[in-house]
Length: 430
Ligand code: SF4
Image (cartoon, rainbow, N blue to C red; front, top):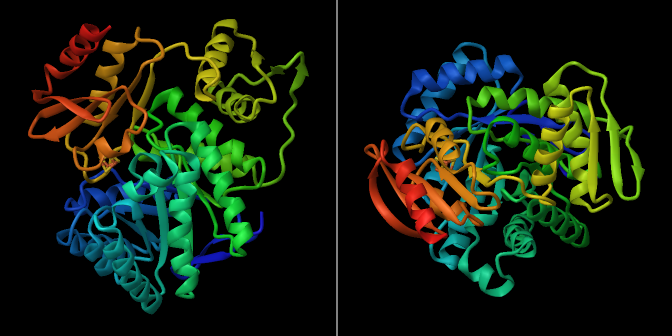
């Protein structure tokens, strides 16, 4: 799909006919300059082309400056993206420091008119400094003014993004990438398609950053990301991708590179369709490769309802059956276990997220069809877990808050007791 071209730093381009850019995000604390620099080094070695770092407040602007300077002094020129939530003043300050700033307009400022004013100021600073931006709308954190008009829908996500893009167009500022993430692959795909239509009608098509947010980790996180991202890439939508996993972020890069390479050219998978069932055979002995191939080839067909079921033959019946179940669930066609939403963690994370995610899965694996979110911080987590029946959120200080839908039902639970408490509360409601 033909898009505008965005320049990030001196030599990285996103959009137009440039190859798909692979990016990731640090999960270290930004005030841990040493640790963040070390993680960036490992990311660059693994092939990251763009690295995002959270900047929770003004005090971290200097931290990201130090991180940038340390990386540049080591000859690492990979552009940095500052991730901003809530503080428009921080966005304005950090736009002078890094190559790109990601903002979530739904929480740029609590008052919508003020948000627009601050956004205009922010664009002026970006223009002066040659800074690119990402308008990153998330399904879980749409502003009230939008949900009142359009509900909590893919259309609402696209409309929300379009308002900010229109402001960029009016300000003659085109160094903009846009994303519309959801943990639900169907919502995510529909939202991007809605936005593409709107941008085409308007006449300015900005490059798209794709991702399935809060995809979790392990095979499920990889499969969910492949299904959502591949569905759009196969139709030419998507210019940069992040596969978010609740793991060491370096693990995200091989999956993202796999997708970027696979969809560098149009792909026609060797799938046979009979009676709306897709049959596929894999000869490889590499289980990860089979998983990624199956998810990115069969998932889009399920998600777009071209078929109703899948049959995988990879020479190992148990693994084939497992992949079929996982891909059916990731495409939201058949649920065989609980649906876990888990954020990847970032510099705001308030507990050992990977451990919490594993413990919650162990305790709740029998609750088929239930949606359970495990989120790293109390600041953003509750707002981001849109579809969850239950939420398990790090408070800091070794405590967890348990949510039913978006309502906290038990606060300050010690971490050691929290997985059991979660199960107890859920079972009391069954
Ligand atoms: Fe970071 Fe997770 Fe909090 Fe999002 S919810 S800001 S990824 S810790």
